[in-house]
Length: 583
Image (cartoon, rainbow, N blue to C red; front, side, top):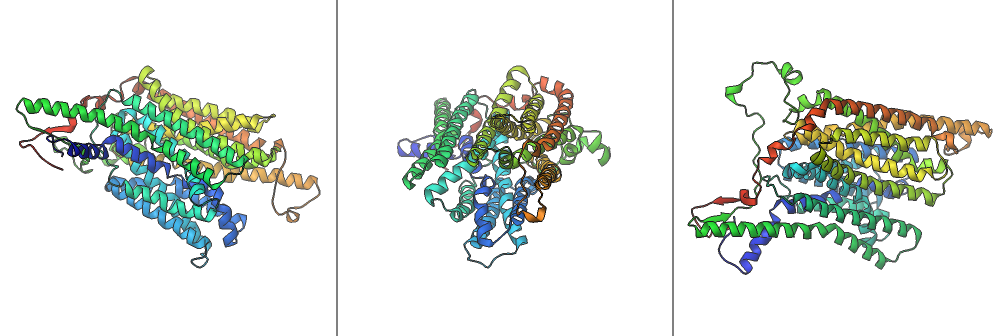
């Protein structure tokens, strides 16, 4: 609590504390943590350094890449931990994992420790990559619970900043260390961990306070993030085209950080308006004879998971509760009720097909460009387009789906279906290429790939409630690595190798006569991407079934229970028998 009496420096200190303990600063801290949680996107930069210094072959490097993806996408542990421990503990565990995993890799690369065995390196990179799930769980889940009526916007922004994190970290490492891939590993080790530690007590669940201009604040953040994304894209292309001095890298990193911190100015302005309103209300109550003090938003004490209402004890069996007596859509499901529901099964199938196909396309984009005869510099442009449109897909799916839902009751599940149909077009452009088609395909696939995750996370929160959201959204994204393994490792890779072997036979060569299998021509990826397009179409049709099942649910007011909260910051005030209370 802070004093209502006094002014000058005391009032300024009270306002600073009010900002630091408010929902908006917690959201700003979440932005920063998510902006540092994308170390996995930089594997392509430092992987060559690992290969050269430790003497690995390409097969070993691919194995490390697999364990990196495995760690990045299996977040069930972080979700379960969040169910039984506070947010600060989840963030600290993630910080410790991030620092330990990447710091051990850095020590190995610079030769400070003896050369680790391959299985040890796999553990290190899996541990470091898995830490981003703890940051996701701590920051994203808490933010969604603090702003439940704007969860689409919230998830779109947070996942958008994660998508930009690779480019942001790249600018920082170029400015601090120069073009030194070994030092990049060190930066990845300490910076994300430091962000989680610094804001460990800032990110916490608070009271839901409805504010009429909340959407306007999020749109300001959206504009800032778009400007940041465009700036990073321009800098990425320029740095590949011309030689930059160290001073130029420092300027680029400074501008990137300034844009990244810009939302704080928006949030301070918002907190100032809340502060003034609270002071006015407090002053009126004081003059009327009621002493009031301002109470800052406090962390909500979560009810015990096993608390039950004795007057409503059900005689139904455990089995029937899981399968036949589930809550209505939008209410809080238990973990098993959600995971074993038909809605989740359909969502899992659609995600496995859609994200699995998109991830396969993203992972193979470099080789696709090479097989179609594009020069290396152009292939890098494809990858940059994928990255930037991945970001636009994330924020588009968050903000546009939220706007359509609020205004027209447009089901978010239908938005998912449309995104999957769009992805089919991008995949077919690779299967049946024409001059310049890969540019269009990289934009479409990047956009649709980025749009799917925010939609998945938001739909899970809407259908199954927020009580066990930490675990459920991490379970939902398990479909991504599973789909990638099936469609990339078991389908696309073998079919590509088969075409490459046919090329060798035509030239009178054998596999033993070449070091690396390569395929040139439209036929290299034609059959795999026809299969991927068909799989994605199947996922879209599955998603369409979910649209039909949830049509009535989305016609109603899915945020009704949150709208019962007061519309003003008065919920952050409480009566007291004394004045002059201090923090």
